[in-house]
Image 1 (cartoon, rainbow, N blue to C red):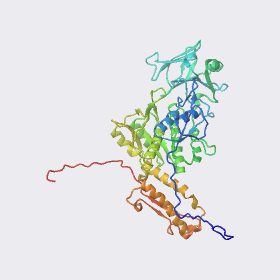
Image 2: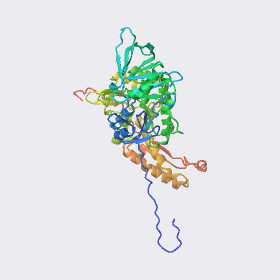
Image 3: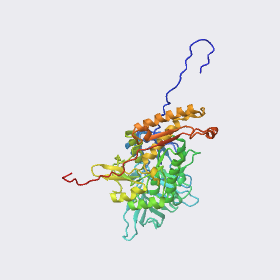
Image 4: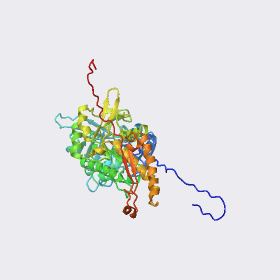
Length: 527
C-alpha cells in the first residue's frame, strides 16, 4: 500500500494471477577427463566442438590445434556429445599427468600412439618418461617386430630403439617379464595393453637420455617415483568440493543434469588404475548424483567385456543399485582423426542423445530407439537372446538393426526399485522438482496462512498443467495426472508453529512402452 500524505491519485499494482514457474534446463552434461591443454580442475562451459578444440586442444607441428589426445577419450567423447545432439556442456580437465607422486607421470604418448618407452631410475635419479615431438622418424626410430623365437611366450615381441648412432635391441620380450638388451641393459618390466607397450629400462639409460633430449626433440617429464609404482588414484577423478576439483567440484554447478567420466576407462586400459579403482570412481559418481538429487551418472562398462562377462561385472563385481545412474553396453566404434575406427566408451554419446531426445520430444520421452550418430558399429553385436539377460539387470544395450542403423535399445536405470526403473521417469521428477524448487523461492518468509496456501497451490497447478499438456503425465484429466495439496491436513498448527509450509504433490508419469505385445488369432469364416 503506497503512503498517502497529500491529496492525489495513487497507483498500486496487484499481481492477482499465478506467478509463472519456469522449467529448468535438462540437457547440461559434465564431462571429466584428460586434455592436452586448458585450465585444470576448472569447469569450462563449452558450446561447440570448435570451442573445445580452441580451449583444450594441443598444438600440432603445423601450428593448428587438435582436439584429440592419444591415451585420452575426452576429445572423442566431446565430439560425440555434440554430434549426437548435445548443445552445451562443462568440461573438467583433470591434472594432466596423474600419479601417486603428485600427478606428474605421462598419461599417453602423443607422437607414437603405439609405443611408450620409459626408464626407471634409482632413488637418486628421478624416473623419466619421454615422447618424440614433431616427426619422430627424423629423431628417433622405434620398431616392434615379431619375436625371434616361436616359443618366446604369449604376447612376445622384439624391440629396436635407434637414436642417431645409438641402437639398442631387445629380443623376445614378454609382457610382465624382465629381459636383456643387445648391450646388456636390462628391461625391468614390459607391459602390453590394447593401446601401447610400456618398456621400463634400468637406470643406466637415464643420463644419456636426459642429456640428449633437447637435440633429439624428445620431451622429458620428471617424476618423483618410478613408472612401475605409478598409478592414477581414484582421488584424482573424485577430487573434493573445497578445492572445486574433480567430480566433487561439480557440486557448485547447479545446472548440471548428466555426469560422465570417459577417461576413467582410458586409464584402466593403460593399466594406470585397477578394477577396484574404477569401482571407487563410479561409486563416487553415483553418490554425487544421489546427494545432489538433480542429475544422473552415465556409467561405462570395462572395455572388451563380452555379454556374459558384463553380466557378471554388473551383478557380482559392481552390483550398483541407484535410480540416479544408468549403464550402457557395449563400447562403440567411431572414426578417429585419421578416419580409422577406434572403440570408445559410450557415456558421453549417450549424454548427447539424451539432450537430443529432450529437445525433440521432452524429458519425459525415454531416450531409446534413437540412432547413435557417428557410431560405425558396436564393439560387440548383441543378439536378442543376450539382451534378454542384460535388460532385466539394467544394462542398456546398443545394437545394430538392419536398415535402421546403430540404436540405443534400452532405457533403464540401475535401480532395483520398479518405481524408478526407467531413466525418463527419474529425469522427469528431477525436472519437476528442480523447477518447483526455484519457482517457489518467493514463498520463504511469507505469512503462512490460507491465502498463501491458495497462491502456492495455484502456481504449482499452473506449472503441472503445462507439464501434463506436454504429454509428460498420464491421465485424461488433470485430476488423473497430478494433485497438489496445501491445506490444514498437511499444515497443522504444530507445523506452522515450527515455521513449516508443507506442499504435497503427486505425479503420474508416462512410462515407455518397453514391451509391445501383438496378439493374433485366426478369424473363422462364420465370424
